[in-house]
Length: 340
Ligand SMILES: [Zn+2]
Image (cartoon, rainbow, N blue to C red; front, side, top):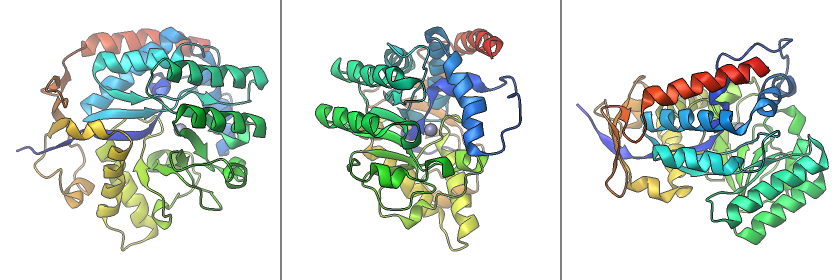
């Protein structure tokens, strides 16, 4: 029994976070979203070097492929290793055979020089022909001048901006601050507390929103295109569909999984070539949202890229040695965790 679909698209990922699993607990239990950022993610990203990033991105890309996800829209930050970081991510994904749209998350939380270097990394990567967007961490960690510079760079290079928007109460003014800048080609991540409409695609990350206790984003209320992301918690998009459905259902008992499925399908607007990839699944009815919503554990068995290359065979990646990728990740995560 099996069925096939096109390749899945993860509309918002952080490949740098794959080595976070098992990291030492923060000094104090975070009690709100801002403390989760400060005590977990901003300690982790500051400790990353390019060797760790390479191991993290390879593991994340392999795990995506093993979930039938052939395209990742990534948002990256490694403030101690900015220059060249987007190349490391792009190369890791190319090695595995997964498509990636890169962005470096510009922020002023390490001062104006950190913001300048983040912008420069986006510009360097994009001008060299890399596939990507201009990344911005979030309005609340950027000055107005930095937001304007990022928007201007994106406009000049003909790409959109990939930015976290009103994920938690700390970023409640995002709508007001981004209103004059945002365009249809922007990727607006979360929009949980967004107080107005902004142009762009919304990336909905239901598991992450639950995990951070920021509330339900209720993307069905908005007129924007909505895609699904994982916010760095793997790249299993059928799992994210199930979570998107049940989160929607928790607020509206008439909700249908057709809606969450339409968000998954909208990902193909971000990376159209993923439509040409063919994923064979371990289950017979992956084309039915009602089946997927109530069938945990569906696995990708085989992935063939649009140009005919077998990238996953019998559930295992063909281009890289899975055991070696895992061993590399274990070695680099030990280094990372020791720094924390
Ligand atoms: Zn994110």
